[in-house]
Structures are given as structure tokens and as C-alpha cells.
Length: 356
Ligand code: NDP
Ligand code: GDR
Image (tube, rainbow, N blue to C red; front, side, top):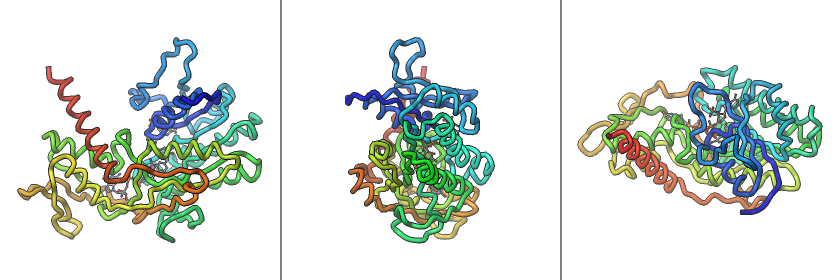
């Protein structure tokens, strides 16, 4: 373990990236503070293994109740924690859901970033604290140029992306206006066994596992023709940390440089679950995948289509390679396998614990 006396504050610590980042920073010797939302059910499943009871002495992992829509709460937490680094990962992060909750998405994803930057300014922490903003490849939206890089024009295609556009630019503005060490990581899709269950990769790997184990009959999906540049979340949080260690703040794309159709990810996941499937039919209504006996296992349901879609994402991570020395390691094919295996394992364990 490297030693460090740094204190970091992570918003969104209960999410996929927050959990991986908290692990990474603890390994590096940081004292880590995370903000979690009040929920009527447990929302700390991803950080259970690093949770430390408040009664333990000298603990290095602390949780605070908070919300990106509550300025006073954020100011108080930043004041108490006095972090050297703030990682703003909290967001209403589901693109499709943002069409249903556009105002809330703007409040948490756009104004939330502003609230944190203002908290730093109000508390006079412009020079003592660094800021990371979780920006996204969704900013590129309607294809202007491929592969997409830091200089590619943005064209958001959802309330989520429009909110993240504001957060991106307010981060740049506070850097330029107040000399703050504030950086944007423009991260392309990254997945893992900890990925939220309603994002497409995890929805697919869970369903493939459940169908293979006889727990589910069919998987309904939306647009199978979208292409995404998928990497492993564990590797991407390291890139976030590297951005914060640079002498100068800047904006970086993190991506693999390869793109994959949703339909190919579906095929791989079912193959890994031991049930090879074939594509049947081109028309939207009959489009789907069946196994060799003809049983349709994956069917397209237009309810999952988005009012405006992002068709093609493929990132150019050259700047991160050169300046940060960051590279992805896991291929999307390996990622699919890891996620299916993890979901099969989780489901088998559930059977064992529930079988007596
Ligand atoms: P998740 O959806 O897994 O996690 C989001 C986190 O934000 C959760 O901890 C969630 O809490 C919390 N949260 C949501 N709304 C609020 C709020 N109003 N106040 C406080 N906390 C809130 O996302 P990821 O970990 O996948 O992504 C992390 C960040 O990176 C997000 O900002 C996302 O938009 C962005 N991003 C993600 C990419 C990806 O491919 N994963 C790519 C590019 C950017 P709870 O657990 O209670 O729901
Ligand atoms: P995305 O991820 O929108 O890229 O945002 P998601 O996994 O939700 O969708 C990827 C693509 O798959 C298509 N799709 C489906 N998506 C979902 N969720 N459910 C389905 O049933 C389905 N069927 C097809 C989608 O239309 C889309 O084209 C993610 C989030 O993590 C954001 O927070 C982040 O900013 C971006 O990645 C980069």
C-alpha cells in the first residue's frame, strides 16, 4: 500500500464507480469520505466490504448523508471534511430515465456540480482542494466525428446529456475564472459486475444467467443497433485518480477505442452462459434472438427505445495515453465473460442460501 495523508470526498460513493474509487483510494492510503443518500432500503451493498462501524477508532472510511440537490448539506460536509480532492460522481445517471425526470436530472446532474464548486469557493478552498467532474461520452450525442476526442463538438441527445453539458462547462469555467484545479473526465461507457441492473450490459448478463439457470424465460431489450465503447469500471476510476494527480487541471477522454453493437454483446453473454442463440428477423417487431430449437429468448420491445438515441460512440484515448499513462486493459469480450460469471455465481449463491 502506498502511504498518503490525503483526504478525499466522493459523491455517489454507493454507485458502481464510487465503490471502485473508494477501494482504490483506501488502497492508496487516503482517508475517504463518501456521501450517500437517505433511502428506505439499504443502498450500500457495493461498499459493504469497506464499511467501517462509526465506533471503530482510526477508521479511514466515513459516510455522510447528503444529496446533490441540497446546497447547505454539501457546504457543511465540505467544511467538515476539508478534502484535498472532491470526486463528483453522483448523478441521476440513467439516460432513458432522464426523459421521464428531466427537471430532477438537471437539478442533480447540472446544478449539483455547481453547488459543489460554489461550496469550495464559499469556503475559500479554491486552491486547497481539487475537483473531478464525471463527464460523459453522452455529450457527443449525435455523431459529428469518429472517433470522438477532447476536441470533438458536443451535441447532447437527452436531458441527461444536456445536464452533463452544463456540468462540463461550469467545471471549465470555474477552472478558468478562479484558477481551480478542476478537471473533466469524459468517460465512455464502463461496466463491471457492480454495474446497475438496468443498464444494458448488466441487464443482458443477469438475464443470460437467469435464463441459463431456468429462472427467467425471456429478455426484452430496446435498440440492438446502438454501438458503444465499453471498458471496465475498475480501470476507469484509476484514470480519474491520475487526472487529479497532474500538476495542471485538464479534460481527458477515457475509452478503449473499440466499439461494439449491443446485439453482439447479447450474443456473447448468452454464449458465456452456455445457451448459444441466433438472430431471427430484421423487422423491428419480429427482431429477436432464438436458441437452436427456435425458442425466442431475446425480443425487441419498442418501449425501451429512446425519443432520441445516441447511435455510435467510439473514443480516442490518445491524450490520456500520452499525458496520464492510462490505458484500458480488459477487452469488451472479457468484460462480458466476467459479468456473466459473476451473475451466475450470485444467482447460484441465492439458490443455496434460499434452499433450506
Ligand atoms: P451509478 O448510477 O451506479 O451511481 C450514481 C451514484 O449517484 C449513486 O451512488 C447514487 O446513489 C448517487 N446519486 C444519484 N442521485 C443523487 C443525488 N441527487 N444526490 C446524491 N447522490 C446521488 O453511476 P456510475 O457509478 O456508473 O457513474 C458515476 C458517474 O459517472 C455518474 O455521474 C455518471 O453519470 C457518470 N458516468 C458514468 C459512466 C458509466 O459508463 N458508468 C460513463 C460516463 C459518465 P444511490 O446508490 O442511492 O442511487
Ligand atoms: P448509456 O447506457 O445510455 O450509453 O449510458 P445504457 O446501458 O443504458 O444503454 C446503452 C445502449 O443500449 C441500448 N439499449 C438499452 N439500454 C437499456 N438501458 N436498456 C435496454 O433494455 C436497452 N436495449 C437497448 C440503449 O438504447 C443505448 O443505446 C451509460 C450511463 O452509464 C451514463 O450515465 C453514461 O454517461 C454513459 O453510459 C456513457
